[in-house]
Image (cartoon, rainbow, N blue to C red):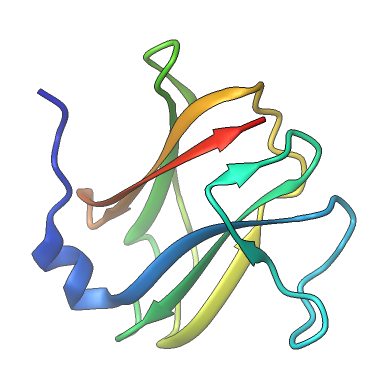
Length: 123
């Protein structure tokens, strides 16, 4: 059985966590340029995530991985974010993600505990 995210761990740190996209080469510059919330990302676009963080996430505690549901393999292995994530709004985009069309899950970990699974599609 697939692992279920730990909602208590998620709720300890996050108010919300969403996926989005932006055209390649475009940078986040609120309010004019901000990722569009979506779970269907064009292959040529940047994969983005947006979060409202309740309390600071210590350096090395946040990690993510991208799982390809079609091949049942990780497209991107778990990677630890080395910096502290401060409380408040946060958005980040991947640049060129290199994912082929298909069905994926962004898996988010806090202190090595699965805290969220966000399904998305690359078209």
